[in-house]
Length: 85
Image 1 (cartoon, rainbow, N blue to C red):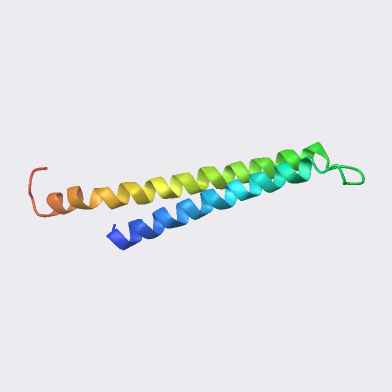
Image 2 (cartoon, rainbow, N blue to C red):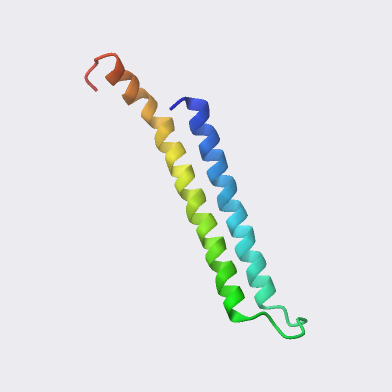
C-alpha cells in the first residue's frame, strides 16, 4: 500500500469515528428531549444507537487498516528486494 493511500484510510477512519460519536450524541439528546410530545420509541433509540456504534467500529477498523498499511511499507519493500527483515 502506498503511503498516501494509508494516510487517506486513516483520515477516513478518524472521520467516520467522529461522525459516529456525533450521531451517538444526537441520539442521546433526542432520547432525553422533554419537549417531545409522545417521546421517542425505545426501539428507534436502540436502532440509532446501534447505527452510531457500527459507524464508530467501522471507522476504527478503517483507521487501523490505514495505520497497518502505513507501517507495513518498509517490511514489504524489504521482502520485494530479497532482504531479510
